[in-house]
Length: 119
Image (cartoon, rainbow, N blue to C red; front, side):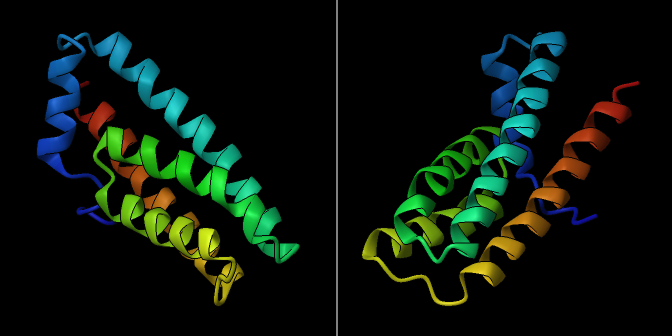
């Protein structure tokens, strides 16, 4: 697990804006994890079809939702991928999506560890 997968200050801000409602926070995290898996699959498919246009929306969606949970590294990976998709060319698209998937798994582990640490 990458300990830097989640920015603690950004995640603390998320807790704050949810009113420290841990049940609601857990629901948000669960939704993020479920949707993230869907977006990654769409990105994988777009890469396999060499379809830059089809990469834009899932990369944008995962970028935005990752920013909301404090996954700054994954946010940046998705931001770069989205920008390249908008330009019409994504060098090593499959490799880039795999990098996003690995980062997402680190984020998943960090979010679930945070939940487990609360007891």
